[in-house]
Length: 123
Length: 413
Image (tube, rainbow over all chains, first blue to last red; front, side, top):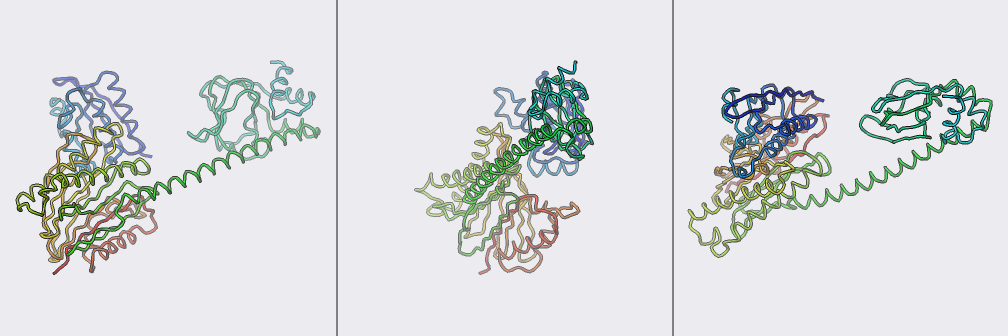
Protein backbone atom coordinates (compact mmCIF):
# COMPACT_ATOMS: atom_id res chain seq x y z
CA UNK A 1 0.00 0.00 0.00
CA UNK A 2 1.38 3.36 -1.02
CA UNK A 3 1.89 5.87 1.74
CA UNK A 4 0.44 9.32 1.27
CA UNK A 5 0.63 12.40 3.45
CA UNK A 6 -1.06 15.77 3.25
CA UNK A 7 0.40 19.05 4.49
CA UNK A 8 -2.11 21.80 5.16
CA UNK A 9 -1.03 25.40 4.56
CA UNK A 10 -2.96 28.64 4.86
CA UNK A 11 -2.34 31.48 2.39
CA UNK A 12 -3.90 34.89 1.90
CA UNK A 13 -4.55 36.10 -1.63
CA UNK A 14 -7.55 38.22 -2.51
CA UNK A 15 -9.35 35.62 -0.40
CA UNK A 16 -8.02 33.03 2.07
CA UNK A 17 -6.75 29.91 0.28
CA UNK A 18 -6.07 26.55 1.94
CA UNK A 19 -3.24 24.67 0.26
CA UNK A 20 -3.31 20.88 0.52
CA UNK A 21 0.09 19.59 -0.46
CA UNK A 22 -0.18 15.90 -1.23
CA UNK A 23 2.90 13.70 -1.09
CA UNK A 24 2.67 10.12 -2.40
CA UNK A 25 0.24 8.30 -4.67
CA UNK A 26 -3.48 9.07 -4.79
CA UNK A 27 -5.12 5.73 -5.47
CA UNK A 28 -7.91 3.48 -4.23
CA UNK A 29 -6.15 3.00 -0.89
CA UNK A 30 -5.36 6.70 -0.19
CA UNK A 31 -8.08 8.84 -1.85
CA UNK A 32 -10.26 8.61 1.25
CA UNK A 33 -7.58 10.30 3.37
CA UNK A 34 -7.50 13.19 0.88
CA UNK A 35 -11.28 13.48 0.88
CA UNK A 36 -11.38 13.33 4.68
CA UNK A 37 -8.69 16.01 5.03
CA UNK A 38 -10.56 18.27 2.60
CA UNK A 39 -13.82 17.69 4.51
CA UNK A 40 -12.01 18.61 7.73
CA UNK A 41 -10.65 21.93 6.41
CA UNK A 42 -13.98 22.76 4.73
CA UNK A 43 -15.83 22.06 7.99
CA UNK A 44 -13.33 24.39 9.67
CA UNK A 45 -14.30 27.15 7.22
CA UNK A 46 -12.08 26.75 4.15
CA UNK A 47 -13.88 27.97 1.00
CA UNK A 48 -10.97 27.79 -1.47
CA UNK A 49 -8.63 24.86 -1.89
CA UNK A 50 -5.45 24.66 -3.93
CA UNK A 51 -4.31 21.05 -4.39
CA UNK A 52 -0.55 20.93 -4.74
CA UNK A 53 0.22 17.79 -6.79
CA UNK A 54 3.95 18.49 -7.26
CA UNK A 55 4.92 15.46 -5.16
CA UNK A 56 2.33 13.07 -6.56
CA UNK A 57 3.79 10.41 -8.88
CA UNK A 58 0.55 8.54 -9.57
CA UNK A 59 -3.13 9.40 -9.51
CA UNK A 60 -5.75 6.76 -10.31
CA UNK A 61 -9.43 7.26 -11.06
CA UNK A 62 -10.18 7.20 -7.32
CA UNK A 63 -8.08 10.37 -7.02
CA UNK A 64 -10.07 12.10 -9.75
CA UNK A 65 -13.30 11.09 -8.07
CA UNK A 66 -12.00 12.55 -4.79
CA UNK A 67 -11.17 15.86 -6.50
CA UNK A 68 -14.66 15.96 -8.00
CA UNK A 69 -16.17 15.28 -4.56
CA UNK A 70 -14.11 18.14 -3.08
CA UNK A 71 -15.21 20.49 -5.87
CA UNK A 72 -18.80 19.44 -5.14
CA UNK A 73 -18.43 20.25 -1.44
CA UNK A 74 -17.25 23.75 -2.33
CA UNK A 75 -19.99 24.45 -4.87
CA UNK A 76 -21.59 27.76 -4.08
CA UNK A 77 -25.32 28.17 -4.64
CA UNK A 78 -25.89 29.99 -7.91
CA UNK A 79 -22.44 29.19 -9.26
CA UNK A 80 -23.25 25.65 -10.44
CA UNK A 81 -23.40 26.85 -14.02
CA UNK A 82 -19.78 27.91 -13.95
CA UNK A 83 -17.52 26.29 -16.45
CA UNK A 84 -14.53 25.81 -14.15
CA UNK A 85 -14.67 25.72 -10.37
CA UNK A 86 -13.61 28.97 -8.69
CA UNK A 87 -12.96 27.12 -5.46
CA UNK A 88 -10.78 24.13 -6.32
CA UNK A 89 -7.64 24.47 -8.43
CA UNK A 90 -4.68 22.23 -9.11
CA UNK A 91 -1.03 23.17 -8.74
CA UNK A 92 1.93 21.68 -10.57
CA UNK A 93 0.84 18.20 -11.71
CA UNK A 94 3.84 16.36 -13.16
CA UNK A 95 4.77 13.52 -15.47
CA UNK A 96 2.24 10.70 -15.56
CA UNK A 97 -0.27 12.66 -13.43
CA UNK A 98 -0.17 15.59 -15.88
CA UNK A 99 -0.64 13.15 -18.77
CA UNK A 100 -3.69 11.48 -17.21
CA UNK A 101 -5.21 14.87 -16.32
CA UNK A 102 -4.95 15.77 -20.00
CA UNK A 103 -6.27 12.39 -21.21
CA UNK A 104 -9.31 12.51 -18.93
CA UNK A 105 -9.81 16.14 -19.89
CA UNK A 106 -9.70 17.34 -16.29
CA UNK A 107 -7.86 20.42 -17.56
CA UNK A 108 -11.18 21.42 -19.11
CA UNK A 109 -12.95 21.18 -15.73
CA UNK A 110 -10.36 22.70 -13.38
CA UNK A 111 -7.79 25.46 -13.54
CA UNK A 112 -4.27 24.12 -13.50
CA UNK A 113 -1.42 26.34 -12.36
CA UNK A 114 2.34 25.92 -12.47
CA UNK A 115 3.19 28.84 -10.17
CA UNK A 116 2.10 28.77 -6.54
CA UNK A 117 1.91 32.55 -6.02
CA UNK A 118 -0.06 33.03 -9.24
CA UNK A 119 -2.37 30.17 -8.26
CA UNK A 120 -3.13 31.74 -4.88
CA UNK A 121 -3.68 35.16 -6.46
CA UNK A 122 -6.12 33.63 -8.98
CA UNK A 123 -8.78 32.75 -6.39
CA UNK B 1 -10.39 -10.45 45.00
CA UNK B 2 -10.98 -13.50 47.13
CA UNK B 3 -10.74 -17.01 45.74
CA UNK B 4 -14.48 -17.52 46.30
CA UNK B 5 -15.28 -14.54 44.05
CA UNK B 6 -12.95 -15.85 41.36
CA UNK B 7 -14.62 -19.26 41.64
CA UNK B 8 -17.97 -17.48 41.17
CA UNK B 9 -16.73 -15.93 37.92
CA UNK B 10 -15.49 -19.34 36.69
CA UNK B 11 -18.80 -20.94 37.63
CA UNK B 12 -20.66 -18.54 35.35
CA UNK B 13 -18.57 -19.57 32.37
CA UNK B 14 -20.16 -22.32 30.30
CA UNK B 15 -16.63 -23.50 29.51
CA UNK B 16 -16.48 -24.97 33.04
CA UNK B 17 -20.22 -25.56 33.28
CA UNK B 18 -20.05 -29.12 34.57
CA UNK B 19 -17.05 -28.75 36.87
CA UNK B 20 -17.32 -29.61 40.57
CA UNK B 21 -16.90 -26.88 43.19
CA UNK B 22 -13.57 -28.30 44.27
CA UNK B 23 -12.23 -27.91 40.72
CA UNK B 24 -13.53 -24.35 40.44
CA UNK B 25 -11.91 -23.46 43.75
CA UNK B 26 -8.63 -25.06 42.73
CA UNK B 27 -8.66 -23.15 39.40
CA UNK B 28 -9.60 -19.93 41.19
CA UNK B 29 -6.52 -20.40 43.32
CA UNK B 30 -4.19 -20.46 40.32
CA UNK B 31 -5.96 -17.88 38.15
CA UNK B 32 -4.91 -14.26 38.12
CA UNK B 33 -7.09 -11.20 37.87
CA UNK B 34 -6.29 -8.72 35.11
CA UNK B 35 -7.88 -5.71 33.47
CA UNK B 36 -7.79 -4.10 30.07
CA UNK B 37 -8.73 -0.54 29.12
CA UNK B 38 -11.15 0.20 26.25
CA UNK B 39 -9.29 -0.18 22.94
CA UNK B 40 -6.46 -2.19 24.46
CA UNK B 41 -5.35 -5.22 22.46
CA UNK B 42 -5.24 -8.26 24.75
CA UNK B 43 -4.16 -10.91 22.26
CA UNK B 44 -2.48 -10.46 18.90
CA UNK B 45 -2.92 -12.92 16.05
CA UNK B 46 0.23 -14.96 15.44
CA UNK B 47 1.73 -14.38 18.89
CA UNK B 48 2.77 -17.24 21.17
CA UNK B 49 0.57 -17.61 24.24
CA UNK B 50 -0.35 -20.11 26.91
CA UNK B 51 -3.05 -18.18 28.81
CA UNK B 52 -6.79 -18.42 28.35
CA UNK B 53 -9.17 -15.76 29.67
CA UNK B 54 -12.55 -15.82 31.39
CA UNK B 55 -14.52 -12.57 31.03
CA UNK B 56 -15.84 -11.31 34.38
CA UNK B 57 -17.22 -8.03 33.01
CA UNK B 58 -17.04 -5.84 29.91
CA UNK B 59 -16.95 -6.91 26.26
CA UNK B 60 -14.19 -7.77 23.80
CA UNK B 61 -13.97 -8.00 20.05
CA UNK B 62 -12.36 -11.06 18.40
CA UNK B 63 -10.96 -9.91 15.07
CA UNK B 64 -8.54 -10.50 12.24
CA UNK B 65 -7.39 -7.03 11.22
CA UNK B 66 -10.57 -5.08 10.43
CA UNK B 67 -12.73 -8.19 10.14
CA UNK B 68 -14.67 -8.81 13.36
CA UNK B 69 -15.21 -12.50 14.03
CA UNK B 70 -17.15 -12.27 17.31
CA UNK B 71 -18.13 -10.07 20.22
CA UNK B 72 -17.79 -11.73 23.62
CA UNK B 73 -19.01 -10.67 27.06
CA UNK B 74 -19.26 -11.81 30.70
CA UNK B 75 -19.38 -15.61 31.11
CA UNK B 76 -17.51 -16.25 27.86
CA UNK B 77 -13.90 -17.25 27.27
CA UNK B 78 -11.21 -16.56 24.71
CA UNK B 79 -7.68 -17.79 24.08
CA UNK B 80 -8.78 -21.32 25.02
CA UNK B 81 -7.29 -22.83 21.86
CA UNK B 82 -3.80 -21.95 23.10
CA UNK B 83 -4.26 -24.01 26.25
CA UNK B 84 -5.49 -27.00 24.27
CA UNK B 85 -2.62 -27.00 21.80
CA UNK B 86 0.61 -25.04 21.62
CA UNK B 87 -0.10 -23.18 18.37
CA UNK B 88 0.04 -19.37 18.03
CA UNK B 89 -3.02 -17.15 18.55
CA UNK B 90 -5.50 -17.63 15.69
CA UNK B 91 -7.09 -14.17 16.06
CA UNK B 92 -6.62 -10.88 17.89
CA UNK B 93 -8.77 -9.79 20.83
CA UNK B 94 -9.35 -6.14 21.74
CA UNK B 95 -11.28 -4.68 24.68
CA UNK B 96 -14.34 -2.69 23.57
CA UNK B 97 -14.75 -1.12 27.03
CA UNK B 98 -13.02 -1.58 30.42
CA UNK B 99 -12.76 -5.34 30.86
CA UNK B 100 -12.11 -7.51 33.93
CA UNK B 101 -10.64 -10.94 33.17
CA UNK B 102 -9.37 -14.03 34.91
CA UNK B 103 -6.29 -15.47 33.24
CA UNK B 104 -5.42 -19.14 33.49
CA UNK B 105 -2.12 -20.72 32.42
CA UNK B 106 -2.11 -23.90 30.34
CA UNK B 107 -0.02 -25.90 32.83
CA UNK B 108 -2.15 -24.80 35.82
CA UNK B 109 -5.37 -25.78 34.09
CA UNK B 110 -4.13 -29.24 33.18
CA UNK B 111 -2.61 -29.88 36.62
CA UNK B 112 -5.97 -29.19 38.26
CA UNK B 113 -8.25 -31.05 35.86
CA UNK B 114 -6.10 -33.97 34.73
CA UNK B 115 -7.12 -36.18 37.66
CA UNK B 116 -10.79 -35.21 37.45
CA UNK B 117 -12.56 -36.87 34.53
CA UNK B 118 -15.86 -34.96 34.97
CA UNK B 119 -14.07 -31.60 34.54
CA UNK B 120 -12.15 -32.88 31.55
CA UNK B 121 -15.39 -34.00 29.98
CA UNK B 122 -16.99 -30.62 30.52
CA UNK B 123 -14.03 -28.80 28.96
CA UNK B 124 -14.07 -31.10 25.93
CA UNK B 125 -17.84 -30.62 25.65
CA UNK B 126 -17.42 -26.83 25.76
CA UNK B 127 -14.75 -26.92 23.05
CA UNK B 128 -16.94 -29.15 20.86
CA UNK B 129 -19.86 -26.81 21.41
CA UNK B 130 -17.77 -23.97 20.05
CA UNK B 131 -16.55 -26.15 17.17
CA UNK B 132 -20.18 -26.90 16.21
CA UNK B 133 -20.93 -23.16 16.22
CA UNK B 134 -17.99 -22.56 13.89
CA UNK B 135 -19.17 -25.28 11.50
CA UNK B 136 -22.65 -23.70 11.50
CA UNK B 137 -21.16 -20.26 10.76
CA UNK B 138 -18.93 -21.55 7.99
CA UNK B 139 -21.85 -23.43 6.42
CA UNK B 140 -24.13 -20.41 6.49
CA UNK B 141 -21.39 -18.15 5.11
CA UNK B 142 -20.65 -20.61 2.32
CA UNK B 143 -24.34 -20.64 1.42
CA UNK B 144 -24.34 -16.83 1.42
CA UNK B 145 -21.30 -16.77 -0.85
CA UNK B 146 -22.96 -19.25 -3.23
CA UNK B 147 -26.14 -17.15 -3.30
CA UNK B 148 -24.03 -14.04 -3.93
CA UNK B 149 -22.14 -15.75 -6.75
CA UNK B 150 -25.43 -16.74 -8.33
CA UNK B 151 -26.59 -13.11 -8.16
CA UNK B 152 -23.31 -11.98 -9.75
CA UNK B 153 -23.80 -14.51 -12.54
CA UNK B 154 -27.31 -13.13 -13.15
CA UNK B 155 -25.83 -9.63 -13.14
CA UNK B 156 -23.20 -10.71 -15.66
CA UNK B 157 -25.83 -12.12 -17.98
CA UNK B 158 -28.06 -9.05 -17.72
CA UNK B 159 -25.07 -6.81 -18.35
CA UNK B 160 -24.18 -8.81 -21.45
CA UNK B 161 -27.55 -7.68 -22.84
CA UNK B 162 -26.26 -4.11 -22.70
CA UNK B 163 -23.64 -4.96 -25.28
CA UNK B 164 -24.69 -5.58 -28.89
CA UNK B 165 -25.24 -9.26 -29.59
CA UNK B 166 -24.04 -8.78 -33.15
CA UNK B 167 -22.44 -5.76 -34.72
CA UNK B 168 -24.59 -4.57 -37.63
CA UNK B 169 -23.66 -5.60 -41.14
CA UNK B 170 -23.10 -2.52 -43.26
CA UNK B 171 -22.32 -2.72 -46.97
CA UNK B 172 -18.71 -1.74 -47.62
CA UNK B 173 -17.69 -2.09 -43.99
CA UNK B 174 -16.19 -4.82 -41.86
CA UNK B 175 -16.73 -4.41 -38.12
CA UNK B 176 -15.50 -6.58 -35.24
CA UNK B 177 -15.54 -6.25 -31.46
CA UNK B 178 -13.85 -7.97 -28.56
CA UNK B 179 -14.95 -7.73 -24.93
CA UNK B 180 -13.27 -9.47 -22.03
CA UNK B 181 -14.24 -8.58 -18.45
CA UNK B 182 -11.62 -8.84 -15.71
CA UNK B 183 -14.33 -9.76 -13.19
CA UNK B 184 -17.92 -11.05 -13.43
CA UNK B 185 -19.25 -7.59 -14.24
CA UNK B 186 -17.46 -4.82 -16.04
CA UNK B 187 -17.31 -1.06 -16.43
CA UNK B 188 -16.34 -1.16 -20.10
CA UNK B 189 -18.86 -0.94 -22.90
CA UNK B 190 -19.08 -0.58 -26.64
CA UNK B 191 -21.96 -0.10 -28.99
CA UNK B 192 -22.47 -0.06 -32.74
CA UNK B 193 -25.90 0.78 -34.12
CA UNK B 194 -27.58 2.45 -37.02
CA UNK B 195 -29.06 5.85 -36.21
CA UNK B 196 -32.33 5.06 -37.91
CA UNK B 197 -33.98 6.51 -39.93
CA UNK B 198 -30.64 7.93 -40.97
CA UNK B 199 -28.05 5.69 -42.67
CA UNK B 200 -25.41 6.89 -40.21
CA UNK B 201 -23.73 4.49 -37.87
CA UNK B 202 -23.02 5.21 -34.19
CA UNK B 203 -19.70 3.84 -32.91
CA UNK B 204 -19.27 4.06 -29.17
CA UNK B 205 -16.65 2.81 -26.76
CA UNK B 206 -16.50 3.73 -23.10
CA UNK B 207 -14.87 2.95 -19.79
CA UNK B 208 -16.54 3.70 -16.47
CA UNK B 209 -14.10 4.48 -13.66
CA UNK B 210 -13.66 1.96 -10.86
CA UNK B 211 -14.50 -1.74 -11.10
CA UNK B 212 -17.14 -4.24 -10.03
CA UNK B 213 -20.83 -3.72 -9.43
CA UNK B 214 -20.74 0.08 -9.10
CA UNK B 215 -19.00 0.47 -12.44
CA UNK B 216 -21.37 -2.08 -14.02
CA UNK B 217 -24.47 -0.16 -12.90
CA UNK B 218 -23.11 3.06 -14.35
CA UNK B 219 -22.06 1.28 -17.53
CA UNK B 220 -25.69 0.38 -18.21
CA UNK B 221 -26.71 3.98 -17.51
CA UNK B 222 -24.10 5.60 -19.78
CA UNK B 223 -24.69 3.15 -22.60
CA UNK B 224 -28.49 3.52 -22.47
CA UNK B 225 -28.44 7.32 -22.24
CA UNK B 226 -26.09 7.60 -25.23
CA UNK B 227 -28.25 5.24 -27.28
CA UNK B 228 -31.52 6.87 -26.27
CA UNK B 229 -30.41 10.48 -26.75
CA UNK B 230 -28.72 9.90 -30.11
CA UNK B 231 -31.58 7.83 -31.52
CA UNK B 232 -34.20 10.32 -30.38
CA UNK B 233 -32.10 13.11 -31.87
CA UNK B 234 -32.77 11.67 -35.31
CA UNK B 235 -36.30 10.51 -34.59
CA UNK B 236 -37.44 14.01 -33.66
CA UNK B 237 -37.15 15.04 -37.30
CA UNK B 238 -38.37 11.93 -38.96
CA UNK B 239 -40.25 13.99 -41.54
CA UNK B 240 -37.02 15.44 -42.89
CA UNK B 241 -34.81 12.62 -41.78
CA UNK B 242 -31.10 12.88 -42.38
CA UNK B 243 -29.99 11.16 -45.52
CA UNK B 244 -33.41 11.13 -47.09
CA UNK B 245 -34.20 14.60 -48.41
CA UNK B 246 -31.90 16.91 -46.57
CA UNK B 247 -29.09 18.44 -48.58
CA UNK B 248 -25.53 17.61 -47.63
CA UNK B 249 -24.78 20.72 -45.60
CA UNK B 250 -27.93 20.31 -43.51
CA UNK B 251 -27.20 16.66 -43.04
CA UNK B 252 -23.67 17.25 -41.79
CA UNK B 253 -24.93 19.97 -39.45
CA UNK B 254 -27.59 17.72 -38.03
CA UNK B 255 -25.19 14.85 -37.45
CA UNK B 256 -22.93 17.19 -35.49
CA UNK B 257 -25.85 18.59 -33.52
CA UNK B 258 -27.19 15.17 -32.58
CA UNK B 259 -23.72 13.97 -31.57
CA UNK B 260 -22.98 16.99 -29.37
CA UNK B 261 -26.49 17.02 -27.86
CA UNK B 262 -26.26 13.32 -27.03
CA UNK B 263 -22.90 13.68 -25.27
CA UNK B 264 -23.88 16.89 -23.44
CA UNK B 265 -27.26 15.49 -22.32
CA UNK B 266 -25.74 12.22 -21.09
CA UNK B 267 -23.03 14.14 -19.23
CA UNK B 268 -25.43 16.63 -17.66
CA UNK B 269 -27.92 13.97 -16.62
CA UNK B 270 -25.34 11.89 -14.75
CA UNK B 271 -23.44 14.89 -13.38
CA UNK B 272 -26.62 16.33 -11.85
CA UNK B 273 -28.68 13.25 -10.99
CA UNK B 274 -25.76 11.17 -9.71
CA UNK B 275 -23.43 13.94 -8.63
CA UNK B 276 -22.81 12.43 -5.20
CA UNK B 277 -21.41 9.22 -6.66
CA UNK B 278 -18.57 11.06 -8.47
CA UNK B 279 -18.71 8.34 -11.13
CA UNK B 280 -17.43 9.14 -14.58
CA UNK B 281 -16.82 7.47 -17.91
CA UNK B 282 -14.42 8.17 -20.71
CA UNK B 283 -16.37 7.88 -23.94
CA UNK B 284 -15.45 7.96 -27.60
CA UNK B 285 -18.57 8.53 -29.68
CA UNK B 286 -18.20 8.62 -33.44
CA UNK B 287 -20.86 8.93 -36.13
CA UNK B 288 -19.87 7.36 -39.41
CA UNK B 289 -21.39 8.04 -42.80
CA UNK B 290 -21.01 4.64 -44.47
CA UNK B 291 -21.32 6.18 -47.95
CA UNK B 292 -18.56 8.76 -47.71
CA UNK B 293 -16.47 7.33 -44.85
CA UNK B 294 -16.79 10.66 -42.99
CA UNK B 295 -16.44 10.19 -39.25
CA UNK B 296 -17.35 12.98 -36.84
CA UNK B 297 -16.60 12.30 -33.23
CA UNK B 298 -16.45 13.49 -29.66
CA UNK B 299 -13.65 12.03 -27.61
CA UNK B 300 -14.61 12.60 -23.97
CA UNK B 301 -11.41 11.80 -22.08
CA UNK B 302 -10.96 8.41 -23.74
CA UNK B 303 -7.79 6.63 -24.86
CA UNK B 304 -7.22 7.99 -28.36
CA UNK B 305 -8.53 5.66 -31.07
CA UNK B 306 -6.18 5.15 -33.99
CA UNK B 307 -6.69 4.97 -37.73
CA UNK B 308 -4.37 2.63 -39.61
CA UNK B 309 -4.29 3.07 -43.34
CA UNK B 310 -3.24 0.97 -46.25
CA UNK B 311 -0.57 3.47 -47.25
CA UNK B 312 1.04 3.56 -43.81
CA UNK B 313 -1.46 6.12 -42.56
CA UNK B 314 -1.49 6.49 -38.78
CA UNK B 315 -3.86 9.02 -37.28
CA UNK B 316 -4.63 9.46 -33.58
CA UNK B 317 -8.07 10.76 -32.63
CA UNK B 318 -7.17 12.92 -29.63
CA UNK B 319 -9.56 13.97 -26.85
CA UNK B 320 -11.98 16.78 -27.69
CA UNK B 321 -13.28 17.19 -24.13
CA UNK B 322 -13.26 15.71 -20.65
CA UNK B 323 -14.80 12.57 -19.22
CA UNK B 324 -18.60 12.38 -18.90
CA UNK B 325 -20.60 12.41 -15.69
CA UNK B 326 -18.84 14.87 -13.39
CA UNK B 327 -19.31 18.49 -14.37
CA UNK B 328 -22.79 19.34 -15.68
CA UNK B 329 -21.71 22.27 -17.81
CA UNK B 330 -18.60 20.72 -19.31
CA UNK B 331 -18.03 21.68 -22.94
CA UNK B 332 -17.22 19.12 -25.58
CA UNK B 333 -15.48 19.73 -28.86
CA UNK B 334 -16.11 17.85 -32.05
CA UNK B 335 -13.60 16.66 -34.64
CA UNK B 336 -13.76 14.85 -37.95
CA UNK B 337 -11.75 12.57 -40.18
CA UNK B 338 -12.44 10.40 -43.19
CA UNK B 339 -11.91 6.66 -43.45
CA UNK B 340 -10.62 5.77 -46.90
CA UNK B 341 -10.97 2.32 -48.46
CA UNK B 342 -8.49 0.05 -46.64
CA UNK B 343 -8.42 2.23 -43.49
CA UNK B 344 -9.16 0.67 -40.12
CA UNK B 345 -10.39 2.56 -37.06
CA UNK B 346 -9.21 0.90 -33.87
CA UNK B 347 -10.74 2.01 -30.56
CA UNK B 348 -10.02 0.36 -27.24
CA UNK B 349 -10.09 0.77 -23.47
CA UNK B 350 -7.14 1.09 -21.11
CA UNK B 351 -7.17 -2.67 -20.40
CA UNK B 352 -5.27 -2.82 -23.72
CA UNK B 353 -2.53 -0.19 -23.44
CA UNK B 354 -2.21 -0.60 -19.65
CA UNK B 355 -2.04 -4.43 -19.68
CA UNK B 356 0.94 -5.30 -17.49
CA UNK B 357 3.55 -8.04 -17.72
CA UNK B 358 5.21 -9.78 -14.75
CA UNK B 359 7.64 -6.88 -14.40
CA UNK B 360 4.77 -4.39 -14.13
CA UNK B 361 5.57 -2.76 -17.49
CA UNK B 362 2.67 -1.57 -19.65
CA UNK B 363 1.75 -2.87 -23.09
CA UNK B 364 1.47 0.78 -24.27
CA UNK B 365 0.65 2.39 -27.62
CA UNK B 366 3.85 1.49 -29.53
CA UNK B 367 3.07 -2.21 -29.09
CA UNK B 368 -0.45 -1.63 -30.46
CA UNK B 369 1.19 -0.11 -33.53
CA UNK B 370 3.54 -3.11 -33.76
CA UNK B 371 0.57 -5.48 -33.69
CA UNK B 372 -1.14 -3.38 -36.36
CA UNK B 373 1.95 -3.43 -38.57
CA UNK B 374 1.84 -7.22 -38.92
CA UNK B 375 -0.27 -9.03 -41.53
CA UNK B 376 -4.04 -8.97 -41.13
CA UNK B 377 -6.84 -9.34 -43.60
CA UNK B 378 -10.00 -8.28 -41.79
CA UNK B 379 -11.22 -6.45 -38.68
CA UNK B 380 -11.56 -9.65 -36.61
CA UNK B 381 -8.06 -10.70 -37.66
CA UNK B 382 -6.71 -7.33 -36.62
CA UNK B 383 -8.24 -7.66 -33.14
CA UNK B 384 -6.88 -11.20 -32.80
CA UNK B 385 -3.45 -9.87 -33.62
CA UNK B 386 -3.62 -7.18 -30.92
CA UNK B 387 -5.03 -9.69 -28.44
CA UNK B 388 -2.25 -12.20 -29.21
CA UNK B 389 0.22 -9.36 -28.69
CA UNK B 390 -1.27 -8.54 -25.29
CA UNK B 391 -1.33 -12.19 -24.18
CA UNK B 392 2.25 -12.82 -25.25
CA UNK B 393 3.34 -9.61 -23.51
CA UNK B 394 1.37 -10.34 -20.33
CA UNK B 395 2.87 -13.80 -19.89
CA UNK B 396 1.73 -15.23 -16.58
CA UNK B 397 0.59 -11.87 -15.15
CA UNK B 398 -3.15 -11.75 -14.40
CA UNK B 399 -5.60 -9.63 -16.40
CA UNK B 400 -6.27 -6.67 -14.11
CA UNK B 401 -8.71 -4.62 -16.16
CA UNK B 402 -11.51 -5.12 -18.68
CA UNK B 403 -10.32 -5.35 -22.27
CA UNK B 404 -12.62 -3.92 -24.94
CA UNK B 405 -11.68 -3.36 -28.55
CA UNK B 406 -13.58 -2.28 -31.62
CA UNK B 407 -12.26 -2.36 -35.18
CA UNK B 408 -14.12 -0.68 -38.07
CA UNK B 409 -12.57 -1.26 -41.50
CA UNK B 410 -13.58 0.25 -44.79
CA UNK B 411 -13.41 -2.43 -47.44
CA UNK B 412 -11.65 -1.85 -50.78
CA UNK B 413 -13.96 -1.84 -53.73
